[in-house]
Length: 206
Image (cartoon, rainbow, N blue to C red; front, top):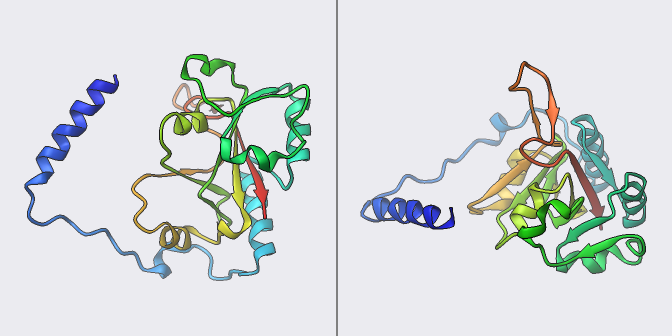
């Protein structure tokens, strides 16, 4: 499958290589991309609104690693993956009986009950998490386990989509996650965790 992908992308790159002029990125006016006229720029207000909206779309938010670890333990999610750069942020909260791996194995993907990866930011107005492209298996780590924990810095909680887009700049790959994965394709029955995590969690850190 990887070889097929490389072949397809090579043909796409070859097809556009000869174009003299490419279409510029669209520029959207802020006033048409914001749904609320009133906004509070205080950092605490953004955090509170994000937590409220994330809860409203079926997600969860924790402000500290100990409370996150307690919730995971209560639901018997004890074996997981954590980005190596984030292990120190967990402190002593994930001791016994947790098993945390900092190297993601595609061969044992079904063994991970949860994953902890870094988020590029979050949107207070919609409760959305922002994930950007990451090398290797980390992108898969964010969507394959049943529980995905995205670590969000408070300074990267944006009020709305327009502010987030401006902050992301020319980032080529952006994934907007609003709550757990859902689908109602079959008989109109809502099912979670089909195309991605069944539990979308945010760990908010300073």
